[in-house]
Image (tube, rainbow, N blue to C red; front, top):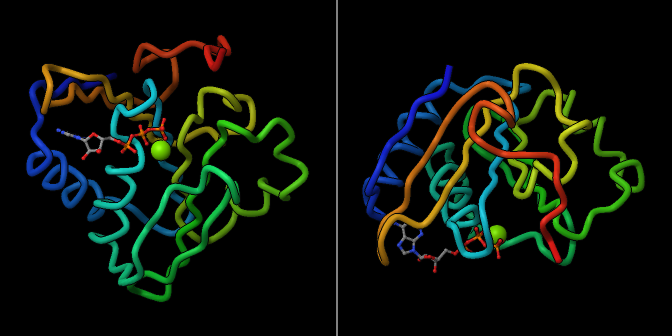
Length: 151
Ligand code: ATP
Ligand code: MG
């Protein structure tokens, strides 16, 4: 089952991230998909803040993964799969199946690595300052495909 929210402003996106944060538990995996500039990192920042991360959250584009301390002693693992051709190289499974909360940008590119039970969120532009958000239980449910559209 997927759910669609339209015309989300930055503030509305932050509210959504706050609500979502309350439903997460150790081991939760949040997969973010959508084109360049869709708001995946922005959403990750809102979600980390809502989970109690005090550090400034940046895009893990070049270092592939950033780790943050959140409330309740939780670790947040923030990934960007855009340049990650071999998830084994960073031992990604240990994080995805571990006790922290994983946030994966461009998860569609490594969909076969994502545990069942992950929350999939697709972001798309919806006018200049708003986004459409689709949330569901699988890549297909949120309208994504396994196709590599990086190039
Ligand atoms: P990339 O694929 O390069 O990692 P991204 O999906 O992570 O891109 P962001 O880095 O979050 O995208 O960039 C989104 C930009 O759009 C930010 O500068 C953000 O401030 C802006 N923006 C404007 N309105 C919104 C909105 N309603 N929701 C999300 N981002 C918005
Ligand atoms: Mg990003």
